[in-house]
Image (cartoon, rainbow, N blue to C red; front, side, top):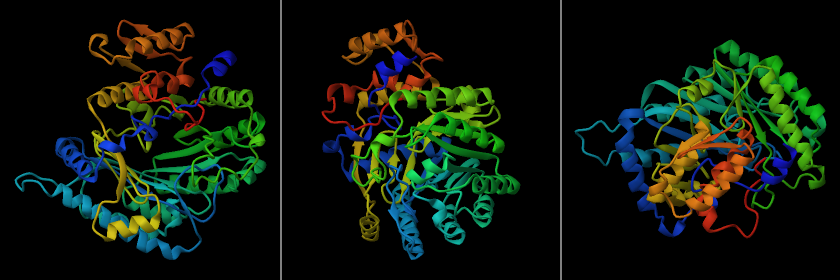
Length: 459
């Protein structure tokens, strides 16, 4: 396996979209085309499957130096209400789009999935979150079995937060753990003792949450296998329903990312990081967790695993999800929306976001309109990322297929994939290289290889 890590550990996308953001063609994108794609997707899918909403809540009281998210660091909680008012105004602009349809049909959105991400959603007070959510819920029909989830910081998620969100229909909570080693926590400026995670996890279960998730990260500064093993065993004391076991994405060259808070020499070497991943995965599986897709693990009862078995697993900008909706509306500063036919990203500063919304415009500033080829490739990459297999028509495929097929043949020799006629299956051995297999189909990147590094390493 060591030689395979050396061979395939190259910069590559995480494929929460295709095309990936650096390869969006903004020359063909416009706000009007974006709105047209939203209306088309809403009309096609709302009555059948409903829609998803992602709300980006960007504020944090302190900077975690491993974080690559768009955020605003502040201790001034006076920012809460103006920001949430802007989010509700942005949602009203989308409602106006949906209502530009014949009145003979029911165009009220059916809300299937909602996720609060950040930043730190629990930076906001429970009452302000309630006001935001009730403002949205008053304008939609909630699906029969909705998936409502939020990301909570263990240090500031209170019983009141958990109870308020539970009463509003939330059943899944995700808590960022990263690592319990004090030296690692100090390096990434994320000091949170095990006792805080234990407390918030137990309160959530006591209230009635049925899906608790913990995020662990490997490859952080000063991280050792002994410390990671300790973190995993401590996590097992709480037995979360699912786990994200992420590779730390070191991308300090991205503007606005606070990843210069430690010396790069403090990061584990490639060999050390490989051990963190391989031994961590093995330990999680020995403790009863099943790998789902890429970098996610769950217990058998969790709906993420069940959706994998039923071939309903989906992946979007929120990561892996058991709800597959065609339209995902992203609200808030820097939020990304997905209409299936197009992607659109909001402006990346709070001030500009609020200004544009106040002017009555949807604050999408960049995006990509998928052409026919994009849609075909997107489906293949989604299949690989979610089902670990895909089937393609060799006779009616893209011109670069021959070259792609040669790369797949090399992966087959390395026992990472199995090829049967026109079907590709990622093997158990190949799971660690899922991103690499998907890259074989990435025509946008194949035709325009980056001259500088823009992605994190695949392993």
